[in-house]
Image (cartoon, rainbow, N blue to C red; front, top):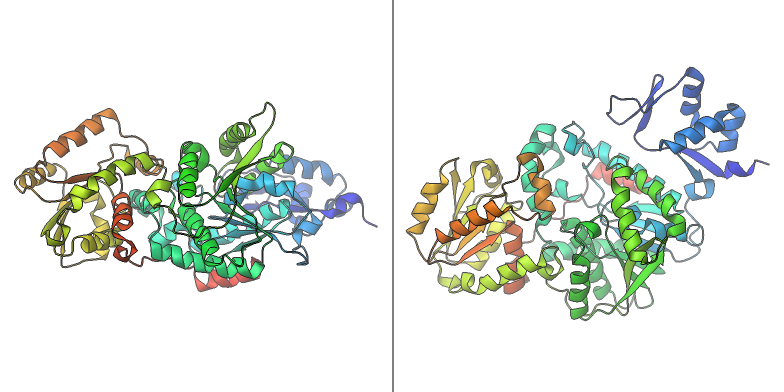
Length: 546
């Protein structure tokens, strides 16, 4: 009979590879380990099937090396039973996450608290991805098939550490819905990242929520969950908002099927720490819409260290050392007691019956959007008869076509004159419309544009704020809703003064205005949008590997 440790399988974390006598991570040129020949033979024998005892018998003294590699975050010790799906004898706990890492970050401690006690399934709404930690380093690692398979492997291993299974649905991550895989490269990223930030901030369109809800319902209902966890949708990332909205829409559409299913809305991390006031705003908006939310704080002190190991498995996305401070700080806050750590969420007392709250009331910059909403009455006055609308774009569009289609619907008789900074003009090349006229403004040309516009009073005008951040950090500052510096705010007040006798709406992103217009005018004014599925080849491997 094998020893007790044989029940623990040694698994190399995804992304680490043996090249000669060096162990490297992905495309890094710097070795994570340099081995002697016997140690290299041991590393090569770690195949995801061999257990600790078996490796020790084949390689006497192996345990010391394996423990060192484990401490370095290169291998994991996984209970053998967790490497196989638990028998489907009971209804599972289903945890829905936007991306392949969000469950570990947000509810990893809760999952570990239940390890071995019940069947658990982590269900990722998005699957195909080209997102990695190399984005910010300018390295060439954009191959969507390779990144997707890597993230699937990470998700399977992280789930196994919690005694859970992993399943991914065939929806592409937001960057691949923004631009197809072949458009991404290190050089293209520099050009694309501003527009990507604007795309991520564009609220999900009603038709997109409906399609995602149907996709989610097909998967969740087939699993017949005994309990369901959904994200609160914190932060401004469209995929987190889409997952929350689709989950709630699914519950409303299938109230009979979920009547006996406890539902938890969990805090999304790290967004819960980036936008600390949003949690209360989201809860207030959901409560105002008729939902009853009961705080649910669970102690994870005993599993927090193991949660950090789960998070560390997603090394293609981040270093656990960078994530730990915020995770720990929020866990301390949630616990509210010295020496304790907790994860926070809200239990639904009853299921949604009516429409969701307006997206702007759930947004991290809710107060800014409220100020814009107050200006919409004047902006839209006489809209049916307006002959002209001006858009002054000092920032990227993100969703050029959808944004213009919403404005065209809101002003059905108007031509839309778009004045766009040269660095963002490439977005306008993919789609044209006879009522949309684009003027590219070179550096130094804005004075002439504003002078000519000053002579045309009465024109409803949209200003996408000029973001004065350095190009290499601008996209991050836009995603994190960084406040404009005082000088920039003064410049925008001056810009408004140069456009007298007209309704002016200033927004950070085109999606901010378009989301408010859809809320005010109704979903019939929203285009269909697109939830781009993963490629056929990726879907086949998902079915095989889960």
